[in-house]
Image 1 (spheres, rainbow, N blue to C red):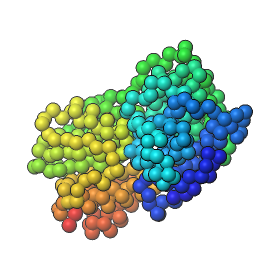
Image 2 (cartoon, rainbow, N blue to C red):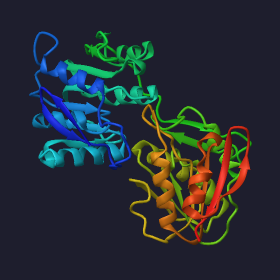
Image 3 (cartoon, rainbow, N blue to C red):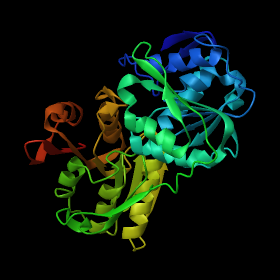
Image 4 (cartoon, rainbow, N blue to C red):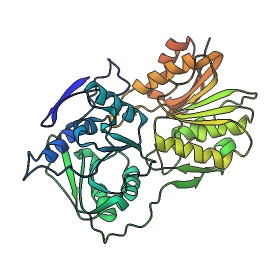
Length: 385
């Protein structure tokens, strides 16, 4: 936990879940720059925040917590980000209902007077967000985006201009930049291209030629990522009434393949992204026509799954937290998997070879087998003793 000191006050903030080994802060210079701008420190005067304030993409709740006195609406795709906001409000003595929490799949407010956008890593997610928010924006809406200079590109500005109206950027401060957009009611951006649907290639086993649905913002939304493609060729062929978890499910192709391979299995799809779980459910519903049992959970990994209740966990863990490279999420997923698996249950993992997941799996499970490997990826199997 660290303290963010701004003209709005000083706030103790942490990411979620808290990890004493994690040195990453819950905010960065882009958040600080936006808060300075809203206070009017760097230009003519403060921003009027008396209307409906929408904060989009607030990663760990730093912006919503700082602006809690103005009762903003936070719109985010991350369940962990939502939990961080709740925890940060509580630790700073701010009422839980001071911020209205909406997911990226919820309907936005009908009217937005101040729109604050933390530019996401995914250009596709930004495109979808702007399309969804455009009907609520009016000619007098104050629209300000913020991000690090490495996150704001010409394509970023073009999206604001094409969907909302004329756009300009600020000077860079501490490697952060602001985006100022003036909404133009005459702009007609047309419909959003998201979600995107496409047919899977012929070399992915039981899913060959089937259709996948990707909502904007999920990993590799425009195509099947090569790690998942490699995993699909090496999945276990199990039979019987297994309880299977597709952990960090993304668009759900792994869990869908498991359901098609073993119609007796019940499959739970879990991801911390609301858009990912929506994608997984759409992919599953289109391709699995049997009465197989399935559950779709937006949450914090396996935290809600009882001990010793799962037969098989399939996992393609992320190794980035926004732009930071970290194995924190993978470590938690592996530890939770061991807890949730029954004796004899199996964890199957795909990952880049250089990440060395086999070392941690051997430490946790006492065993780890390489099921498949190529120059870039490995598929690993660990058994709960």
